[in-house]
Image 1: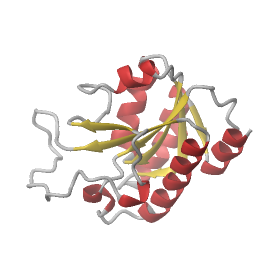
Image 2: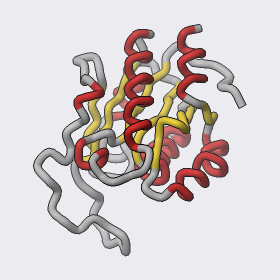
Image 3: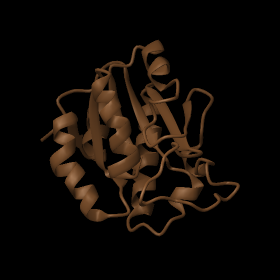
Image 4: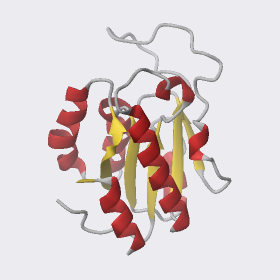
Length: 182
């Protein structure tokens, strides 16, 4: 289903496209990076907000499946393809989602943002958790499905087909680009 509209005050939220995650052996990650970079460039050209999210730690608590190994020194560095700009909002998170424990909501509200577009890694964790918070906070949510990936393709598929339509609109990179260009 095509995107209904692009709000005048919208933002692109790029989740966890950083060296320590993009370097993992995930099928399709290269395509997600190139599509996300297209979105970043288009949002900047349209003078829309770009939020670059990275993760530098984890929430306290025990989990059955976790990363219990030391992180490499450059783990949290954003990938150079994003070409971070001074106008970008940088959010470093220590949780799965990018709202809890950060100033993301405050930064978006300060800019009058009403709609957030999501791309990045991983569909079923960082992207979904951040998007659920955005939805709960009252933002119009758009998932750019072909600009996100999960280590588990079944999780990605389930999110895109079942979970995401309950939280917002699901679109493709090309669909978003057409709408942004008017």
